[in-house]
Length: 381
Image (cartoon, rainbow, N blue to C red):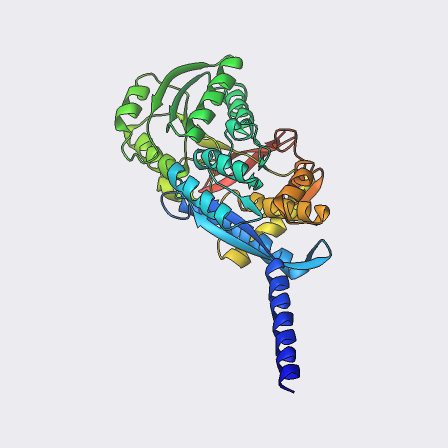
């Protein structure tokens, strides 16, 4: 009797261990990294909430990979917009054996972190890093779902000269991978369109006083001041531009093209004074889906979309779709399928990757600000 009783306990224990093992295999972990502390925490939280909403929506629908129902889990890390912290948390996610990563937010952290993911074979999709170098390092694991700075900077340069009829521009950049790269491409776009760059000054991504460089530029009377950097710096810069009486339009990329900019500028923005471009955007046929997303996002996140939450949402969807199609969440098995993504229907439009990992036919939306609100001027591809 004792032997039989013991064997029954052993069989029950074995069944429990098998069940626990099966349960462990049913969790698919996706990492997210962005600056959820520091000056651009509002943008990092925007991206993270987009990823969290995607996880929630997919779990509610039910995801089956390789014939097995799985539960998706988001492992979120804060890189504070700092390259060193970015590589540390990237390694932390690799050590946690995540199945894929959405992030990082800015190019300065995305680029160094991409090597860590590449060395570990972990697929990475950035929803917002726009420096071209990110996908030009030859890493097979690096993808992005927005247009890059070549497109953004060049388009803005042409727009300023051709549409705003502003032949003379002054440039300021924050010397980050993002700010410098964007400013260089803008410079090329201006010159190619027949405009003149009459000054190029530099600051950093933690500066608060820009009076010296603004006074220097004011003496040159530029039609436009272009800033390569983020909204946390652009806001105080706009306040000082107004204080100094520098009469020029202010132009920047997606880093300043946020819902938070008017508040950061504290009432110093005139109507149609500021122009910017977002690396993304939807055509008229996709607008209803985007509007629906924004409504659902506000209900879920208790905040409005800042910029890239929809792209973070779609990045999660693209990763999971590749796993489903490959029948495996093993990075080595689904990575080749991810690389061939074509026509994925996301809230930001159809997503396909080229051979570098860049989104094909990436959109760019031009905006201005009126009465403290962003106003779209049009989508360019």
